[in-house]
Length: 582
View (cartoon, rainbow, N blue to C red):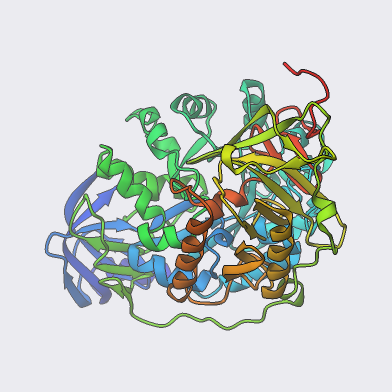
């Protein structure tokens, strides 16, 4: 602080000057004692200056309501919501969510630095505080073709950006162990005093030791309480995830104790727009933890102070003198519905509504507006030839989890030995088509789990390289779906017998739309209704699940534009099984 600021502060506390706002009779979350306590609070120029009522221009009686710092989502991808940060601002701020630690990994895989610049620009001047972790793996692995490649030298200048907190989810463990450029990415972030986040979906004990020793200090990929404990023992922060596909919160709760809860935060990772509208963002994760028996003061401390401490945000995450006056008031510890939301000492939302409009207009770069560029292909390019014994490697998805398993099965073939879809056994065909630079790469494999009875679904949202991914019962509908995707500039489509049943255009990078969240809801509902016409699956979100079927850092197998990838062994598999495998 400047000397005059310090002098003013002293005079305010001595009651020689009048503060902006005093709030009386409020039950404030104390993250140090982990309890709520009834007190008064005084705010001046966006900061809390006293935990008592000083002389102030405005007095607000909270009448015993609870006050909590604005919630922090410790890790998420804005692109998964399919809407721009301004839309998330309008939806999340009235719910008491004040900060997103965002990884623009998805849009960077489509458009490189242009994508990062776009996300930084689109998230400026909002009440929602969007902090950015730089994507560490573009492309994510050597087993796919992305739209860009980002090196340590590319990323280094961004580390000095005021809203960049560090290096995001390091997911390629082989790169951590052997790659020189990854060494510089991690080293540059650490040299700047920045965080390095992990992505430990496929890490054994030795890998965890490596990550911890290298200064990678968080993970959001735990699926069991024991995995969480192993990470906490090594000093990791564990982000308990409640996303639209991966929801590990309930499984991780047994790992949280009063001894170790300081190392846990909440995150959403990937939230689909309909799930977001129906249930909320990270606020839904906090509510669920409380409903499952977690003490409300503990849960809210994890969602605020723990996350702020993890990312070294000195003025965030607590309601104490010297901290930012960012908080929400609510009545019920089991509900958390925000009645009043305050940002920098100003009321920004009341009873679920914003008090002022959000900036919306900014240019979309050509590379993001015209991002669907796959090479022409025919049905012949989608054929899977099998050895005469008909045995094939089959990818199996499982509802509620992005982990997939591999089986070897005898399948149907035509007279020439090519794989045939078998809807009676829930065997469809998954195709991943390179869509960035006309490379012409197409990877295909048999897949079980979508329960298709006819038609196809397709999307340009396909983690992490975001190629065009299609699951279908016939090759003609793959072509029809691809042409519609090209026409709308990216997004999601459902096709049956060559006819488009429904679509959701994502015209920005094939990942985002400029449309308001509530306006796009009708299109999403039609998309799900169309899927119900061609599938018997009703226990998972098929479109978000589809987006993970080409993510080659999540075990056991995934399909990319290169082919079927054995994630653990790091190799491309033949679809045909030429000899008995153990």
